[in-house]
Length: 92
Image 1: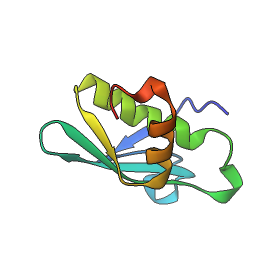
Image 2 (image 1 turned 45 degrees about the horizontal axis):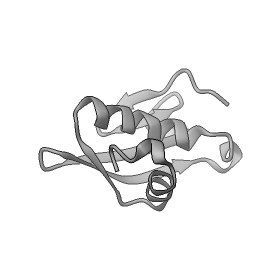
Image 3 (image 1 turned 180 degrees about the horizontal axis):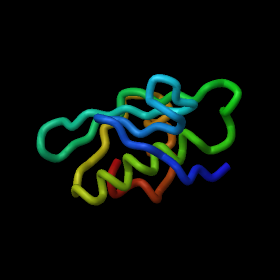
Image 4 (image 1 turned 120 degrees about the horizontal axis):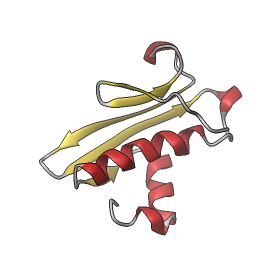
């Protein structure tokens, strides 16, 4: 499933009408001048395994690349995906 409407909130990207009722969300926080810490990724059970979490992660990766920052993944999903995919090594 390709999501064309990923929205941005303060330190988060989400899919849905609002962040409070989102079907998927990834949250992050800036750390120092050169890092972004991803602390949470969540997709509602009915929407899992459709690539939503990956697309949300890609938005944070895009931000990190645009701001020339590295990502520190505290959540296990982001850590696993970033570690396993060579396309993310420039920000991991």
